[in-house]
Image (cartoon, rainbow, N blue to C red):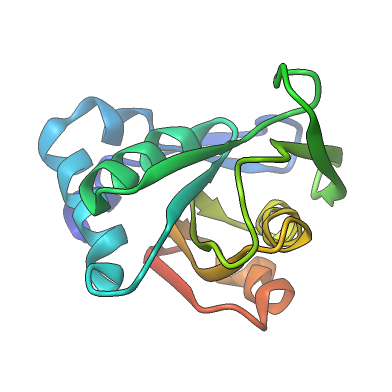
Length: 171
């Protein structure tokens, strides 16, 4: 995973002072690195029954949709408020730098669906936990949460203690 690490740059004080943002833009711009990241994200789940992949807005859309493609399942976007045109289910949560919400169409997940959650980063775990809650509110089961990058010092895993977590890179 050193190849992937070499394609992630630090942006200090973004989105606010004191936060070091892990920018995956160079990674997704490099076809070989992007392919390696997707392969690594889905490797543990290739033989696991999964109904769909869900990705959190916005970078989770990149990795999640490609993971869904490779697993031959559908993709479910978990969106910021006001972006979905149909009836929605929502969850409010806290970020390390403010409050947020996620929404999903109420018919996107059915009881018994087995969902792989995918995002670029696991930091404090707020977005991932909210995503799990959203899936479970609609009767879905979170098979696992997969991340390209994990920041263990921020203890995001603690908020996901009831879920399998797979990450490719730790800082």
